[in-house]
Length: 113
Length: 112
Image (cartoon, rainbow over all chains, first blue to last red; front, side):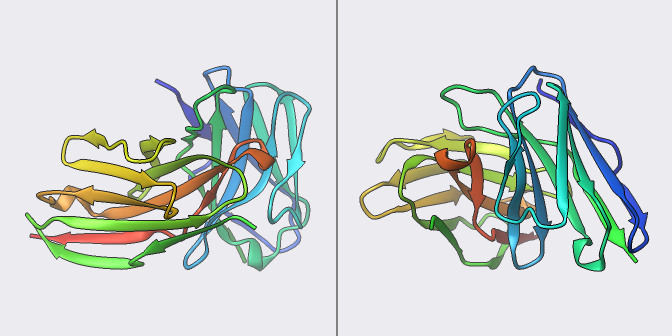
């Protein structure tokens, strides 16, 4: 079974703090993704990575950065957290090839106060 | 710009009812359409559809794709309270590393 884990289920941070969200997958998947999910807006793509050390902006990258130093780990960084980044953050991974299925982690619910 | 529109946005049914969830889309470079179920946690994969007219089935759930009319439906027969969830439709976008472009979801509540 593919397993995608995220470092925290719930996180509360203050405005201006630097925040790290970690995602680890155990199936040697090349592609990894970060989405945020908000009521009425659905899931939106923040950043994705084709492979180690590669990163690409998604639809809403402003205020975020990412790091992929190892294949199994994809980190999302909020350089200076703001209240509008309060959201559910979902990480996903995908094996490169003909299947488009993505496997999701349990999510991190981040509250910025 | 690719677009995924799901309807209805929410639905309340009684146990035993049959429901049909709709997903229409616009896309420049179709790869695949996927359905996910989300309870209070990670979305879990239901179906991936790439060809028109071929029904995918898993127990009481089934789905079909119409690439000419640009829509897909997800059917759930004999609904149970455990089917209560948000159902997400997504397009695989080859321009974004095969990231998924999601619709806003249909929130289904099945009452006893």
